[in-house]
Image 1: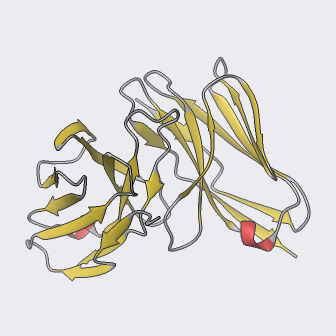
Image 2: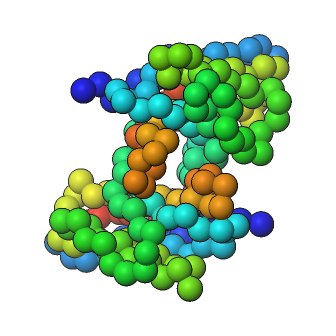
Amino acid sequence: GQNIDQPTEMTATEGAIVQINCTYQTSGFNGLFWYQQHAGEAPTFLSYNVLDGLEEKGRFSSFLSRSKGYSYLLLKELQMKDSASYLCAVRDSNYQLIWGAGTKLIIKP
Amino acid sequence: DAGVTQSPTHLIKTRGQQVTLRCSPKSGHDTVSWYQQALGQGPQFIFQYYEEEERQRGNFPDRFSGHQFPNYSSELNVNALLLGDSALYLCASSWATGRSGEQYFGPGTRLTVT
């Protein structure tokens, strides 16, 4: 079966750095996405990785290792508004998005 | 530039009833995907429409059906509602030929089945 694993919840301090991991087992691989979802709102696109390595976009970076079935989202200089759920999604061989359950990130002052 | 819109925002239905949810994609997008998201879970893929046809389907029963119109807007229909159908229903649009195929989500429709 297809599976995406992420930690359920993480806590970090304002101004710090946090890394959210995602491991996946899917039927094929055609890219990995990270989305942010605030409570009661729709997911918003953060990043896309299809090749191994690090993609940096401002305070957010995302890393991919296809051989290990592993990705992480790195958030720097955490702000209170970063409190949200972070969803990892993999596009499989059928170009269908398989989603993880999300990681709830709690930022403390 | 209007983003993805969905209607209604909230809906309360009774078991056994039928419901229709609507979605208008982001301007320029031609592909619409529908997801069901239970509380505390990630979205579950229902189906995707492109060129007015269902292109892909997730593991949802035939009670879930859809349609895409020539203007790319879409509807999700659910028949014979069950209590377990209570969830947030998200519509996402994208370009079929976009580099990454990143999806833009609407605000969702919160369906409650009693």
